Length: 107
Image (cartoon, rainbow, N blue to C red; front, side, top):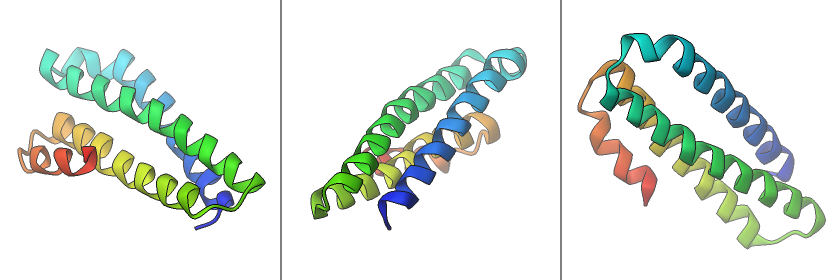
């Protein structure tokens, strides 16, 4: 994965963050309970911080090639998908299986 791939990942993650945040505030808040909305809020919060970190690492990788920047961005991206994604799936599907995936993404 190159810095370009990580920039694209950060852009897509940022788009999903904004879109799901707006959708959650205007649509999902009327149909989901407080616990499910809290899960979505937690996922959005972590996704926002991880997206900014991935973007920063991708910019740093363009200026200086470092194996540390590369692996940090890879694990942040993987953690974002597993942690935030599993919280979104848990809130929307009510399948408790996703509760076992969430800690894996948070490690």
